[in-house]
Amino acid sequence: MKKVVVVGSINMDLVTVCNKAPLGGETLFGKEFFQVPGGKGANQAVAIAKLGTEVTMLGKVGNDSFGQELIKAMEKDGVKVEHIEYANTATGIANIIVEENGQNRILVVPGANGYVDKAYIDRHLDVIKNSDILVVQLEIPLETVEYALSKAKEFGKMTILNPAPAVKLSDDIIKKSDIIIPNESELGVITGLEVDTKEHIQKAAKKLLEMNVKNLIVTLGSSGSLHVNKDTEEFHSAYKVKAIDTTAAGDSFIGGFIRAYSEDNIGEAIEFATKVSAIVVTRRGAQTSIPTIEEVENFKG
Ligand code: ADP
Image 1 (cartoon, rainbow, N blue to C red):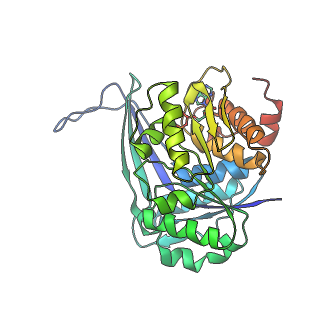
Image 2: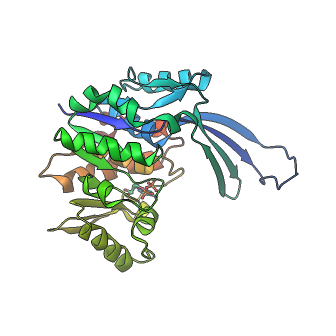
């Protein structure tokens, strides 16, 4: 059974639903408020655990009630949380204002996530050493992402990079990532190319491949995904489902992909991931919307 380590962000999402977001200097009543566990790192760890793969989370929360709550939520879903540290600052949060017309405004305050540094990775190197796969995103300092990837490659591990939120990436980060999984807009930022048509996406994907990426999987929302490597260029269709909330679609895709992955069956792993994320978009929430393996097996599309 493979073991996974996720090095990444842990956030509390503070969601306010309102008719209209206030302008500067204005005070309005909102309609609803809820707080839900989030952060791309934590979401992906929960997806991996709920789908039945052993996963350890490496990251930091603040020494506050959000931090304790987030650790408890991950633990309840089966993530190994004993290496998460408390930083002497606030837990990371995302302030999300959702207008009824569906438009979101999001302010992320990284807090403790910003303190996930090289020294922290060094204190927990054994976790990377004892895992088979390292998964990283870009909600912690970039130099820590690069360092974790370097260590994983030194130990001969498989590495997966979800380059979100997207920034221009160094050649070093790209070289050390065995599989890169961006969505289409992230692919645009990484390559600096247009991604508005299927042809443009293919062109941008090829450019990234030329930068020494072994496997690239671009997720395309309701259009599915595109897998490219030196021998393959293959589109995978999404399921036609009634999507009500696409939060964590990409995070659950990664969880599903890892569950089904082995080196010679990337296509099958993508098919499984596509199923998992199809279920997720039919449910509200992030970590709560991720199905169990039984639910995926019973899904008929
Ligand atoms: P992200 O959440 O990172 O932006 P995407 O929106 O590309 O990622 O979604 C990831 C995957 O989730 C897609 O490749 C697809 O398989 C699935 N998915 C997303 N939106 C839908 C949808 N509306 N209907 C069916 N599947 C979807």
